[in-house]
Length: 159
Image (tube, rainbow, N blue to C red):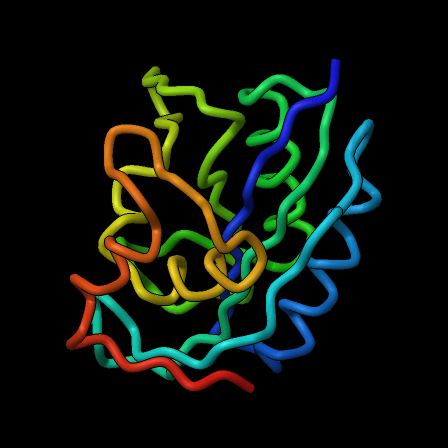
């Protein structure tokens, strides 16, 4: 059975534009998964730990037969292949891949919360998501366009 999922991508180290473009292509190499839509790239200021370079972000919509946990494990493995280390919360990174949504699933288990618990507060997720699916709705949060209106202090630059 095929499922629709959204993946957030970000990077601010080691040629971030190339990192995100590579990861967008590499999503097609995941088992039983193919990219069906991809946003433009966006530049955004860091969130949390601000003493680091700006991020390059994008969102991809994928069709997958993988379960949410297996898809997340594949995303984490791709991060490692691309040199991701986890030194501290919100640290600079070569690649960050987040499973944002999976069908209309609302789910929480250790290490996996769907929808992503912070996505509705992050313009660098919402704007690219809105670009690829204009009528998108985040389970338990509402319409993406409405959520984005609440992020007026966050500045994005579309590349």
